[in-house]
Image 1 (cartoon, rainbow, N blue to C red):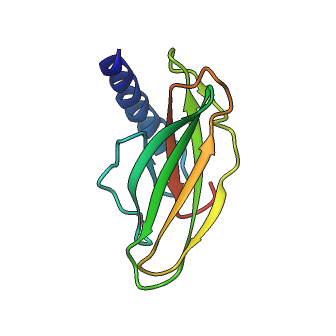
Image 2 (image 1 turned 135 degrees about the vertical axis):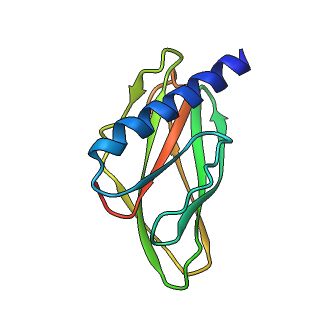
Image 3 (image 1 turned 90 degrees about the horizontal axis):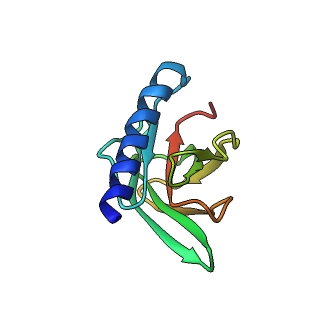
Length: 129
């Protein structure tokens, strides 16, 4: 069952990368639970860890975002949640700004919007898309 969830998460991540590549106004990074891509935004922002916890029947997605640059940066993020069928929830959420000091990390988190959620992607962008 765990392998099935991993395969679904990897497939969804690949599909979202392809979907957003054609319509995003700025480059984005996507990361899922325990899946950290080796990507850095042009402004030096990188996802350095992800995790998922459960609060009762609701999952909570957690991501650590690091500013590798020598200047304070603002990055935009949002969480997208998925059920066992790969259906995305709250993918139309607005981008949330996050200011990170040079050389520091910030942790962002969000509770799932449905108890049916089994996975998430956190998306980062240098601009609010």
